[in-house]
Image (cartoon, rainbow, N blue to C red):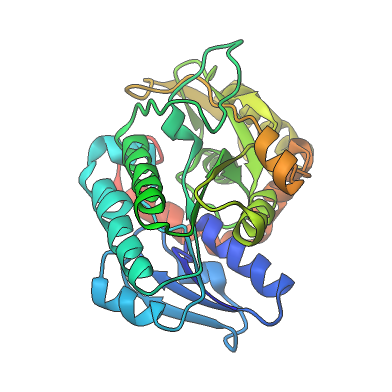
Length: 338
């Protein structure tokens, strides 16, 4: 099978390519990536070039997409602008990629009669939960609260419309917050790890009481693989980590592991600082996995304590990968991720 996987030079996409090439020795992966700020060719360093093909380009480039799809059996779309803070600063790129770019990709895939199309969305389309609220299901009404989440919700509705109108063979997945190797260091967990490794305090929004459902990227890759091969067309599947934690609790977990290993250059109260909360900050995300478990037999396998420890080790062992990215972020902004 020949699969177009868009956005492979990002965090989840690069992990997914490695997973698929390792699991399926007769598959070929074509990677279409625009190499925006979070796209990094080093994420795929060492990949077997015989079955992996990189094409620089945007999912919004109709000609490039059509040419690629002429030799493709299936598509998995990871390409997206995905950082909420950046969407608050400037929402236009999020609409350009997550809505207009997706439409170009869908239209071309429809005309090329692609056999299978998986769109990677987010739990943020559902909005926010309070303590004690039931977890989001696939039928929870959309209630996005950030420009990023709104753009992804619009993309999900496009997918639904293409299935209903044209019978387009699309499936949507909505993962919870991922963590693991190759995650860009502006995101919360790698930001924590790399700041503690370099002796800088970790910024924490508000009082750190916001709750997220953490999912190891390896478990997410397995789920998307199963949905690609066995998920029902026209359906959406939540992919939850079943590991709800407050942000401040994740910080203390990371600090504790790193301190015991002697890896943290800054410890105690000096290791973090509370900063002004994000505008419209969602309080809690939590996904109900009942559907994907019942239909496909998937459950997350990685315990969060083990996954966090493995992730910390990866960042310690791969300083070459993130040091230049940290310097670039510091030069770009006086904001949250500096």
